[in-house]
Amino acid sequence: MDATNMSKIRVLMFPWLAYSHIQSFLELAKKLSKRNFYIYLCSTPANLAHIKVKEPSIQLVELLLPSTPELPPHHHTTKGLPRHLLSNLMKALDFSSCSFSEILTRLKPDLLISDFLQPWAPAKALTLNIPTVQFMVSGAMPYCHLLNILKKSGTALPLRSNYIHERVYDSDSLTLGDRPLLCLEGSSNVMLIRSFRELEGKYIDELSVQAMKKIVLVGPLVQDPSEEENEKTEIIEWLNKKNPSSVLFVSFGSECYLSKEDKEELAHGILLSNVSFIWVLRFPQGEKISAEEALPEGITGEKGLIIEGWAPQKRILSHPSIGGFLSHCGWASIMESMKFGVPIVAMPMHVDQPSNAKLLEEVGIGLKIKREPSGKIEREEVAKVVREAMLEEPGGPVRRKSRELSDGMKDKGDEDIGEVVKELVKLCGLEANGYV
Ligand SMILES: C[C@@H]1O[C@H](OP(=O)(O)OP(=O)(O)OC[C@H]2O[C@@H](n3ccc(=O)[nH]c3=O)[C@H](O)[C@@H]2O)[C@H](O)[C@H](O)[C@H]1O
Image (cartoon, rainbow, N blue to C red; front, side):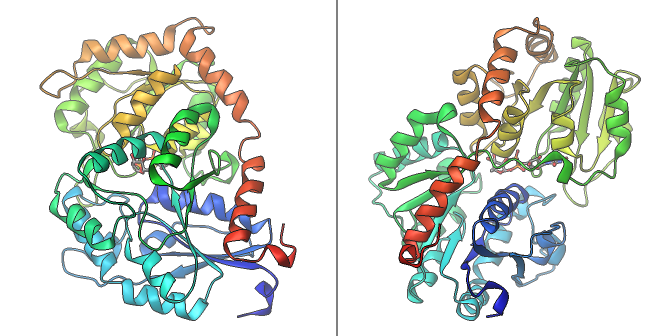
């Protein structure tokens, strides 16, 4: 162990292989690295290649997955992964559990902070007497729903790793209901959650009882927009020419893709709404087509800007010209939208997104695009909801509530981190050493 981190609490962080999970862990690592922690952030080379770390107390650790013809190294990430390869990626991660054990044995950290799709990680750490904390990067509400499903099915907690394996691989839909995400065997009775009381207090309390865990909140963990890479400066220049709160931002995260029909209806709905918009157009690796082929004729022009590939989402959401965010309601996107006071037009797709959208409506900061019984969206519905969210007078209910919550979040996260530090120090049995 090198001298630089002798006096620090050494933590190995092991997020699931998704961009938004790794970013959540990285934002937590940045806060902990300022509080006497030395962090090893472990993921695949395909994920770590996109991570720029300037903190000397954060070290990236590569985990090599077995490669196969259908899952070469550049597919060892969910960012841009074709959906049909997701269960292959989960299996490949499982086959790397021995390599992970070697990392654990070599580093001998004081603590492991792990995610939900590596059920074997806490159990491995336990054999080396290394305590584990689970870090759930989504909100508490979807997990409450999931635990209700598990309880009704008579499933005992904590969930044994083989239970997780069976359910995750058996279900090709991989909806939240099929992915038991909690209470892994071997993890401690403390669970970190990326949330805050003002948003989902009652669900946090319910989850604590249901999961039999002490829930410790880490706050919204939103990356500072100034730290976000900004190769596409033309986007901010385009926004600077627009009126305040006049532009709709359209983006569906790092791993969700619209069907051709949804893209078509959404495009016509946005045209019907007559608002200016920025649309991030993304495709799974190997399936990219041009914006002209993907979208109906006449969608761009002075009112619309199409960004192909990846956009600086935090920079865009924090721009004063943005007045609404049409989103799939991934948890990180919700945290960011709230942080910058932008109302959400919800178009959830799968996993926890439908319950995230329900939470937004409950709290009053989001309006949902209703799908037809067939599951399709209609352009008239899109136009109606977008106009309601965007064109209400600035003091309108959704915008006002979004601003209120954003103001309440301004310093969110700093006081939470004190509580997090206290719990982690206790878990490592190091409180006597005067760590604060
Ligand atoms: C936790 C879980 O992770 C998944 O992540 P996914 O990437 O889909 O969406 P987000 O959580 O919004 O995360 C997406 C992240 O990518 C960033 N981004 C995305 C596109 C882009 O062009 N530029 C960017 O910077 C964005 O700022 C956010 O931080 C599932 O949704 C799931 O529902 C969610 O709860």
